[in-house]
Image (cartoon, rainbow, N blue to C red; front, side, top):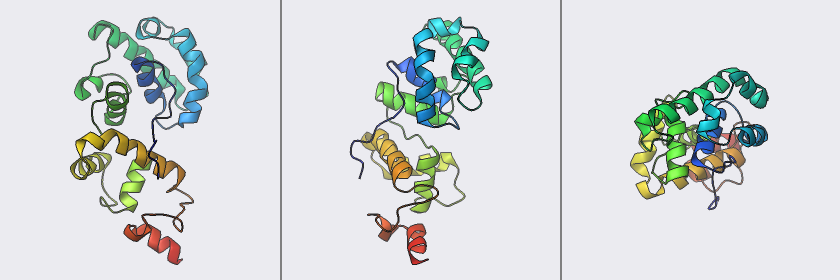
Length: 198
């Protein structure tokens, strides 16, 4: 359904993508994309953001939820990139996760989209779709979802599968009003079958 699925955060560099993904936690990509142009115009790289005043960064991203803690995280992330990684974003999942505000999902998105390093990032859409299609138990953690998808999807398709599942969950198998009646995977979806029968 979504062969051209891709990341929807606006970023011109791997560093900007990292910052945008950190900002996207518990926020929409649209909301992040409204805030980042001014942020990236003033602080386009890790060197400039590392020397930024946190209150100025807060002011630039205040339309995003949790903006105070996110401002501290992105400034500290920029500082660490400069001081501990020589101005380069680490291309290793474990090292990326040492940066403030970076967890598995963010690390996988950045590695996949910025550097082409395979990974499956599990966000709310990927988790919901995986559970509705009973690829995992309803009680599965995001790590268990990631591990299961990595087992059933060929590694070469991990990044594109992540984006396709996001698009499917964001635009078709939505949380509140899934389009089950017109769904091509309805025969494989216990959730959808129950919904349609109602």
